[in-house]
Image 1 (cartoon, rainbow, N blue to C red):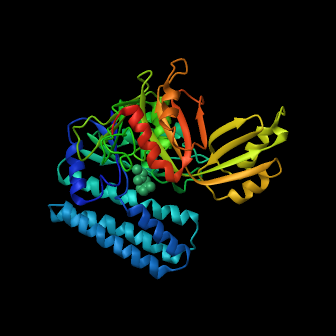
Image 2: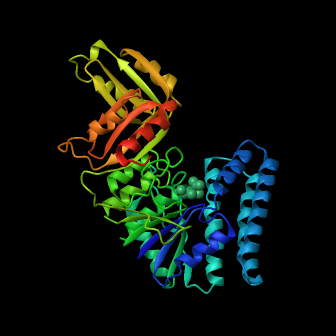
Image 3: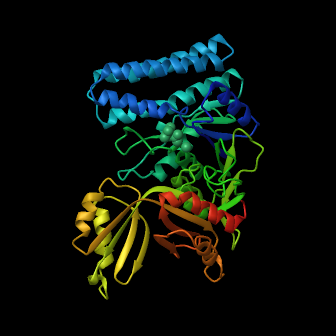
Amino acid sequence: MKVLKFGGTSMGTASRIKDVAKLINDGNRKIVVLSAMSGTTNSLIEIADYFYKNNASGALEKTNLLERKYIEVINDIFEKEEFANKTKEVVHGIFDYIRSFSKSVFTIFEEKAILAQGELLSTNMFQFHLEEQGISSVLIPALDFMRIDKNAEPDIAFISENLKRVLKEVPKVDIYVTQGYICRNFYGEIDNLQRGGSDYTASLIGAAIKAKEIQIWTDIDGMHNNDPRYVENTRPVPMLNFDEAAELAYFGAKILHPTCILPAKLNNIPVRLLNTMDPKSHGTLISNKSIKGVIEAIAAKDGITAIKIKSGRMLLAHGFLRKVFEIFETHRTSIDMITTSEVGVSVTIDNNRRLAEIVNDLKKFGTVTVDEDMVIVCVVGDMPYEQVGFQAKIVSALKDIPIRMISYGGSNYNVSILVSQEDKKKTLNALSDAIFNTN
Ligand code: ASP
Ligand code: MG
């Protein structure tokens, strides 16, 4: 069986929803994972925020507005009054549930319960649409089998056991529809897999049932070899291995959530990135195969801060790096890039929430310098170190650009370069010219 995930834009309008229904109706059995319609999760966050700030009337106004949008979508999707009415009833129930929070004390639990409604809305509408079209399908509630543990990590054993149980309990159909993103936590409360988490759901389901393939359907034709917003003539990368895809997903290619890679990789299930607007295009196939000695793509991650700690005490000392890293751990801030010299170390972070505290603590160890508004540009491919030329090609392409940090060797799949935000476009284009000759 295959697992197909459709994101918010694929669910974004009545006509897109109808297109997805046509696309999946090919007689093969599959599990279809859906996100909320695009914009809905953001609206739900706003609604929750109104409740949280004790502004029930603001929350209700926003809720009613969102409900009206759904009613319009329903009117556009359904042909038969009977199905439209059934769907409206369920959708109305969901909005009544959201409205009911005006009467409760508002905590993180209530917020998560509200956020879960987006995927419940899209999947219910979709399932009724499939029924109206006479397509053999059933809705399997993610809250019956998706669970995270005490550390907010997916509980793989639970998911696998319960998904299999649920699949046995429902009638045998062609299409099993379920919600992305939402789950229960260790205490059985409604929770989620973080923003953009529907890709993760698809991958966890794929792993649980040992799917033949996981397909992530979006509105572009796969991962591109550079950022089309900054570089002309980019093209989709036909094949990547899991490590390359993980680097690209983490360092900027927004098309795939990075958490989605690991369950697929561990279970050796290929992930295909496909385009709902152009279903015949090849897209990108991610598997454990890689093309040796080829640079596949370039990506960039914005909003990076570089921190340098220079200390005479690092010279010939042991335990220095541990102490430095401990500070980041204490402040629950993860490090992306590291470069070292004998008397200093530079690291990057993508989250400045605790920057002041981190810098303050680091000052115990030496002189601290902070550079904000930096960008990590990441060149990804299979670049074994024995094969000379990759690093030279990358560095020489950047001969006119000030490079703040440069890193290779953490894996063979990535050369990372840190430049300032203002040099981002120039860097991406220079690399593109040198590596892909696109301009
Ligand atoms: N609806 C959720 C979000 O907007 C999950 C997803 O789309 O993957 O983050
Ligand atoms: Mg997404």
